[in-house]
Image (cartoon, rainbow, N blue to C red; front, side, top):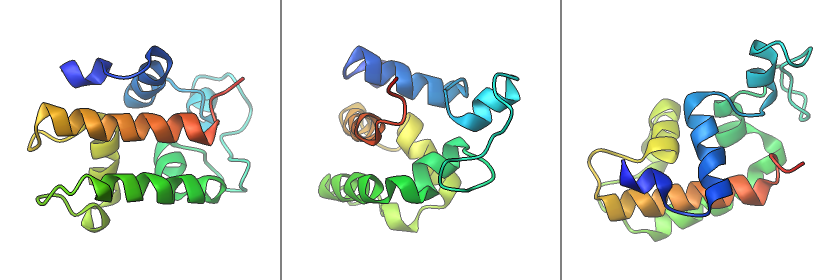
Amino acid sequence: VTYYTSGPRYACALLTRLRIGTCSLNHSLFTRNLINSPSCSCGCRCESIPHYLLHCPNFASRRTRLLDRLENLNISVLDVKSLSDSAFMYLLLKGSPFLSSKVNSQILTITQQYLLETRRFHD
């Protein structure tokens, strides 16, 4: 998929790691026996990909910005707020087969911006 590689290399790598489940979120590290606990710094028992992208209070303001950016795309066939968690995660990580490559590229760029702005993956 060509739009998977658009954007800065580091941001593409982060998004790919989330997509394939080998990111540095605590749940992923825990399942690979690299740390002792999957818990999140917010107090949640599990810092999973859905938790990070959709629910973690540590990133609420950045998530609001992400939602605003998605809404500003004015995609008439896409009501972001009505999507289930799994459908919304799929959209953020992979785009949609019902949208053009251009729109999918814009969506993944917005997701990449969120990943960079949260600074969760910075050393």
